[in-house]
Structures are given as structure tokens and as C-alpha cells.
Amino acid sequence: MAIVKVTEKGQVTLPVDLRKKLGITKDNYLVVEAEGEYLRLKKVSPEKPLEPEDPIWDLIGKGSSGTKDVSVRHDHYLAEGERKRWRSS
Image (tube, rainbow, N blue to C red; front, top):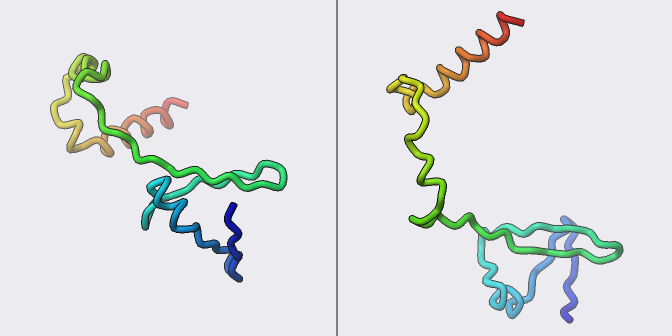
């Protein structure tokens, strides 16, 4: 068990051996949760990229709106849909 000091700003330094063991490096994020009188820290793991066998790939290209420029004018189409919804209410 390690003992660390809390600074005036509420900061603590994680012991180097624990950082190495958990692979915590500069700019990593930690989730902090309270459990009674204990604090639980958990490293936030970055999302892993999709694997080629991931089933989501089967869905790509299945739907079609007939509109060819959605990737370029995405915000325009969202705003247009909101205007139509607002006018109809």
C-alpha cells in the first residue's frame, strides 16, 4: 500500500511502480469513483479499432437515401430536417 499526499489543488502523484504496472502514462485518463471512504481509480482504455470480421461492416452501404452528398453536406441535411419538423409542429 502506498501513501500519497494531496496538494492544495487536490492533486496526487501515483507511485511510479503502479503506473508502470497498469501502463498509465502522460495524458492518460482515469475514471474516479467513490465507494464509501475509498476512491477507486480505473484507467480509461482507448477504443480499439474495428476488426475486419466485425459485423458492422455488413451494414455499410445497405441503406440508401438517394442523396449522393450526405458526407459533405451532413449538417445542412440535419438542419433542414429540424426546420421541417419545427414547421410541422
